[in-house]
Length: 333
Ligand SMILES: Cc1cc2nc3c(=O)[nH]c(=O)nc-3n(C[C@H](O)[C@H](O)[C@H](O)COP(=O)(O)O)c2cc1C
Image (cartoon, rainbow, N blue to C red; front, side, top):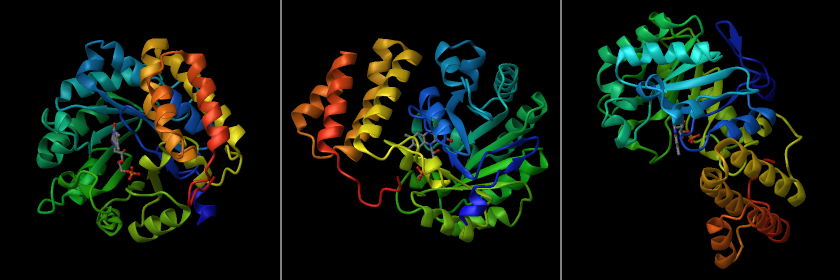
């Protein structure tokens, strides 16, 4: 199985480096996170969702989210509910160097489904088809669709939507093995992803609750998918996809991890500017502490997560990891 996951996956005219793909994670898979995940060997990385309307209307935040310097292939995920915005946003992405557009039809957040995008599109397949057709027609680069199994247990329509997407020219489907109404509860249903495999011929990525090499083996076997996507298991270790794909050269010792964390932190500050970078980094710092210094005192944790002094945070993080290093149970790296 390791041999298979090390192979590239061809998606129309582009190819992944291997078959362990870093999931789009809003608020997490920003440029620094993706650059690190890619550098450490993820097969492909995907931007956080970018709102199509906001991108077309020149929102600075959307432009920050869609950047992909140094990343190949550069995949931008768009969210939206109107064909005209999807069409124009896709063109902007392609003109700025994106290698593929992914359409978000899986986000369960009320903020997104309330606006009738994300997984709410699985309740209106005609609209979903219209958006896919508009996006595919707008650009020469491949278009993919990421979806859940359906809206709820009474409406499992991923096979129907995936088949329509293929017929409309999409080149890749990703399925997270949960319904929208499950949010992140219970266990992802890898078997249900197989019903999508059975009706499409384009590549399929299976997603949901993959953390270990065994999980990869099982999800690929059970779903029949060509590749696997990893989301939350990469929090606090952006190198995880690469490690799962066989890259042994990932941070392992306390010193290596502390130096990686410092680099990530400084990349965040460089990307967002100091004020926003410090704030946006806190969730990452917290995950690093949970993974590698879980016995840190509440006072030290609070100090690190509230300080605005970059040098102080770097020093305290390094101390925390080097002094309190705990090898997490079941850690791959
Ligand atoms: C914090 C968070 C943000 C997410 N943001 C996105 C997103 O922007 N676009 C998307 O398609 N999915 C998003 N997802 C869903 C993930 O890509 C993935 O489908 C889901 O987490 C299941 O995979 P996992 O079990 O490996 O985490 C997000 C999930 C989480 C937890």
